[in-house]
Length: 422
Ligand SMILES: *[C@@H]1O[C@H](CO)[C@@H](O)[C@H](O)[C@H]1NC(C)=O
Ligand SMILES: *[C@@H]1O[C@H](CO)[C@@H](O)[C@H](O)[C@H]1NC(C)=O
Image (cartoon, rainbow, N blue to C red):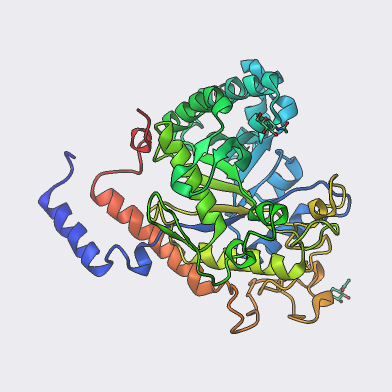
């Protein structure tokens, strides 16, 4: 606080007067990300995907690998990347030299043109119940981190891993959220690592599964962000009107129980399929439109969850495309916002960027994509999301002002030791 002079204070209070904490210009830096899965043989080339992503206002992409074609195509695109390392590589990464060469060829060679900001090591590793795989997770993360330190990239690229919501033993009510007891010995040291390296905790959360598993008891409106009475958490007295926020706060509660109440949670996957097998209740274009459309709207409101109102919502929708080669039930191949030809899988209120528009999906195709990526309104009045250019402007302004304030008070951002840990 040596730099904290009266002049700074005056500037700061002047700024706060101009932009009180709840002003739209000081809102959270929530933004929308999307999972770019590629288990398909009919997807367009990555070059054609760049304008498509811009058209939906996505500014972050998560990959399940470090596909060179994608990372090259997105050079100078301003889109941030989370790259992935598959579970099958964890054992090889026990060797630091392997981690070092992985970082060199998959991260270092693309920076700074392609903005790789995070590496997700493994996906849902702990819920495979495979002790050897689970045991290799943290050492692999540590080696990847050490490799980043060695090339001085550890401050700009975080190392984390994505978990299934099934790591929780209790998720209801949210305030009683707790990790599966048998997983605590493997999760605790991971949390310590994330906290010390300023990395977020990633969770894949699908209210769809809760609905599909118990459609008689679970309210469709509650899981799809439609207006509903909601629930009151008997432990915290907080009111929840959607299941995703309840799930996120259950994760925060579980982190708190292990001593990491401030570790930021990101939703590395969430989504809703537009098609499913006969027994996959709820999988339909109508429900997918409600879930994903309302989700984008909620993210754009830039509020946190009831328990963590001041924390950014960081959500990656699953997924960009329907993926025709994914195994499993029909729903697995139908989570995409888009079909492989670039037309919307259902009307989400944005229409790609074609002249076709609503009701004419055949014309919303890649050849029709053109700058400036203006978005057509959806159904005015249907309550779903319309991503406006105004929203993007506010987002940018809010960052600038946040940075100004942080500079004024001589702080350059959250420190690792602000993130909890005991
Ligand atoms: C893993 O173990 C937990 C707890 O014993 C169990 O509930 C779960 O079904 C198992 N998952 C798999 C994929 O075997
Ligand atoms: C894609 O759009 C272009 C330009 O509007 C049009 O000429 C072409 O026929 C469309 N292709 C498909 C498959 O709809």
